[in-house]
Image 1 (tube, rainbow, N blue to C red):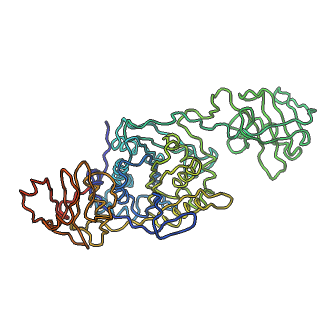
Image 2: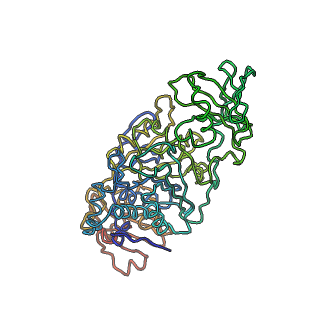
Image 3: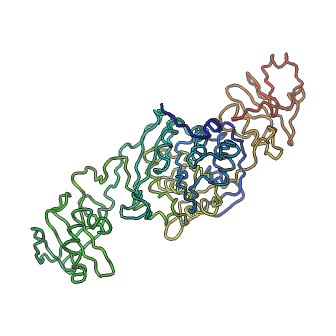
Length: 556
């Protein structure tokens, strides 16, 4: 399998194993009733902090538990003017690169830096993913080729499923005047953790009949007849017809505004510009019926002139194309035309987040492909939280079907609370004419590391976090706190685990402490303590393994 080499790769290829473990500090909970100090217990999390360190902190509770991951990482366009920093020259990233990659950092291009930034994060994301889980990654042409190669390396070539093409801009929209070719699409990679995952939906009805809602009703069939390009065209004054809207149906019509490239980009646009555009002032609001045009089986096209000169463009009405089954108006099934959804995305969530929002409809479509809508208890992770679209989509899905799906969002930027969390609050409570979804979440800050630079336990660490870490390092399963005996961690595979630690001080394993704390019967005992006074023969007889705090605490 081809691999990609870049400056600094050898320094970061195993860096995900060296990332310091930080505790997560609870800031507040939020429900439809407002903020609260105590944890909501919902499992929904928004974490403010470096996503590399935050991903590491999620491992004890969530390794192998996440069903669906969506990330929208920086596209590395070099544009630093957006609220979503799209350049890897971020102070935190540069500091991390300088520490991990070292002097080579001075020689890195922005592409090297981007790859150094992404690789360990993808490694940790894979660890968090369930064996039958799936990950989606948005990207554009800047790093699309490089991303594909490192995804193959991290997830395995056999776990590549597809690359979707997402249309998000109209063709006539000018993005940058100095570009010869304008981007109207982005790419979306889809990888699974293993062959246990099966896509729920392999073919998607990309446009459906959602826009086919119009009916043209002729109320006075006494038209004026014109000969245009050998076609007998019927003209109706505004009093001779009525246009109604109803529920989407295959036999109804779609209204298309003739603007931009449509004016000369298809036969309908060219016909309008040739014959009708000059009539707007003289015949405002008139309707023209043109026979033998189009491939929708309606027998022709209706053209509608604007009602006044202030509206520059006219419209035409077409039926569902007959040569494209299932009402698809796109060239292939992994192409999604979401232009309208992206044009309207600014209004979603009632927060301003230019150039970075993803529409809820886009996320909902990914959930359907992944089968998340059939998994009411699924955990969904987004480690580049941005404007909070992923949380919005999860809450909306839960409201629709009564599910209890959980979201985890990570955002390192300063707006984690003012935009990311604020949007989720608005969605829960409702905003404007949009009703609330209900639900709740908890906001966390990335706290101090569990171990200091000398490898010793951080004295400020909550003992509960230490227990959680040790239990996970031994069992790779989530820790359940045992309030009745603070020294007893639990039993796993008939091994009882104990942690002799009190008031920031490691205790000595002796006959006294053994008798005081070790009550659970098991075939084997693993006991963490500061030192051990028990004779080796005694420990062998009762199958006791002593592990020293902190030297024998595993790093993961």
